[in-house]
Length: 390
Ligand SMILES: Nc1ncnc2c1ncn2[C@@H]1O[C@H](COP(=O)(O)OP(=O)(O)OP(=O)(O)O)[C@@H](O)[C@H]1O
Ligand SMILES: [Mg+2]
Image 1 (cartoon, helix red, strand yellow):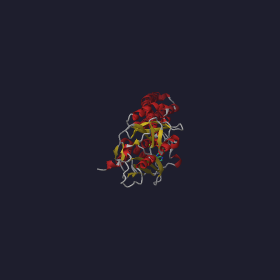
Image 2: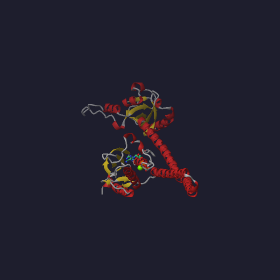
Image 3: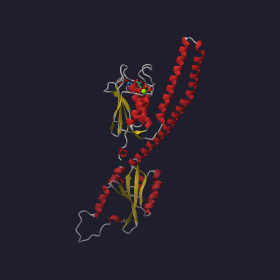
Image 4: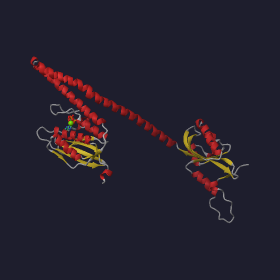
């Protein structure tokens, strides 16, 4: 005896001779809804043979209904999930619906697909179990995406560990540079000076010259160590950001450096820490005044504007300028274009400026200035809008 399956949600109505004939029969309607469903839907009888197979099932499993009808649903189960799925089956066969059960199915071509299953019992008109209806969502893309996300997350975590380690190494380096290197250097300088003082009468001019070279070399090394420490300070500090009055910071720098001929325009405030803003302006304004043309006093203009959530600060000068082929490399540590005798310095200033820019998500560069010298620019974070509001 073949059981007639009664679907509670859409029970076939008892024909009513007086009712107007519906253009589309409810059963046809139901069949069409199933057919156009985006989810694969198939049903099976109590023996597990497939009794219906919709268009989406054809797409998801890559097999036509004609091929699948009458086959066993067990063919869709990969070995590794077969046991787990048979308990889902048992649960549905005992009359309970299983909702959104995530597992794997096997396509007839051997490919595994990630699926989310909803399995509902089907009953005949007498209410007896007649089989199961399974609605399948192909979630392979979602699963792949979340696996990729997890991968990316793991990579990020690994990079974070590496970064923490390299920061720690750097801290150790800074410590070594400040203590272990400075100490022998200080001793060396002290003894050479002692040598100079006590034994000067015994030394000829050449000997005195050698000593002067050693003292000078030691002093330079001391400056290099201090500059390296200054650089690593900006590499490591994770200071909280806040509103910084850029124009006030620029004016302070001018005073500290004892400069004249520096115009500070109206500058937008930035969202950073005071020390970084001071370091940027100190280095850029200091350079602008230092690399002046020997024949005249320098003119320096500090200006700024807001551009797409950032502030661009510009320091223009009428000095010697930077030729295009050197514009990238001068930002590297200890890179200078001149001998110390011409312009003092170790070449750390611009490396610090770039370091601060990059840490703040901006950049620093140099171009030609309308004033005839160089224009150094840096982008820094602007004060967020919500903070601007009262
Ligand atoms: N305003 C400028 N005009 C022309 N050249 C510049 C200017 N600013 C920087 N430079 C060039 O870039 C080089 C690197 O600048 P940076 O500030 O890093 O080092 P420095 O000023 O020489 O030394 P330090 O900053 O350590 O005292 C300078 O030596 C100089 O050759
Ligand atoms: Mg400098």
